Length: 212
Image 1 (cartoon, rainbow, N blue to C red):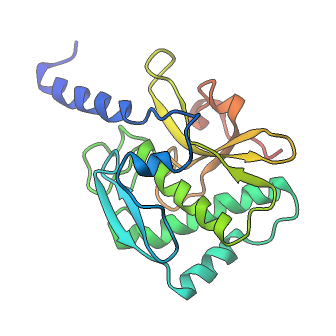
Image 2 (image 1 turned 90 degrees about the horizontal axis):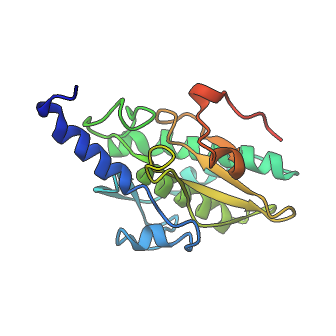
């Protein structure tokens, strides 16, 4: 039986997870608009943490950091290689910005590190990952994909609400989720076909998805 002492914590977690429900039909920029964040650029962007972007740290990339982001992405001839490059780029940005923002000890998931300083929920992760994807697009590195709105599953009817960044493969029209929420700071996110991810996919239960 749930103790009354733990009830406020649980209710708080439910409210925070509810904030992870973003419309998949909205523009990629809607996630920034809802939080009052200006469109991110390499010269000025905000890095989210604290659950639902309660804390936003203003950052920028200098020339060396921009070049390191490009190097982390690497070369990509195929859509599959491009998705792998996105994952490496997201990991690099977390490794770079973690020490700057106090999020380098972020624990994968929401409940494990709940209440700890520098922890991110899925809304924070989706926002930061979308920022990285915007940078890759603006640098001309995305040849096989276009950005799309964040995707959401759950809404409590089929599990906890959960939101992630996503892209669309241009040739096939297929959506892929770039989900950094399951892993701790600096670990490459999972790249999962939307159809699999939306069914409730979890790497702890279902294992990693093999590259296509």
